[in-house]
Image: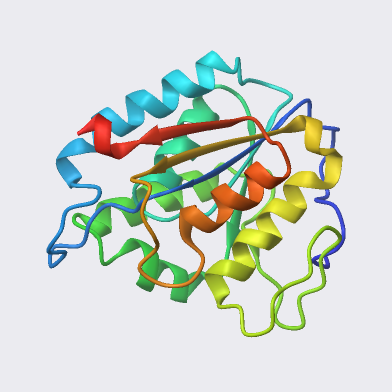
Length: 205
């Protein structure tokens, strides 16, 4: 599969749900952003958002597989019968090492990632190496892997038309620790007039 080709699905999705959100905090994080103790609150809010959109069989769910928001979203989508596709900005061993294991209870999150992966109809997709050619975006020179993955994910989500896209984020409204992040994907989704549900963590905990 190339970056510019559609996902090889056995059906045309009714709607495409794209997610971005915070990871569970690492033990050394000084300013809490997604404390491990708020996992149940986040899971409930994600589930309520999907139910409000009547997400279910015939819909496609796209997300990375990081600890915290990504996995909670994918688990909620699996429970509702959506077709899941995990999108990784790095090869899987690096992704697990950097985006799952550093969080509080990282080994438990890795087990949940592996359980999701075992139930996929198609394996996780790893973002193609540079040059990254997309149908809907020009990738900025010097863009980091997370920014490129945001654009790649949104490009894939738009393959069936912007009218099918729904964007859900679990976010405090701030910037990312590195390049890309939820702020970047939020702006790009809004630019394409996608319906957005923003679960603002500043008011959730």
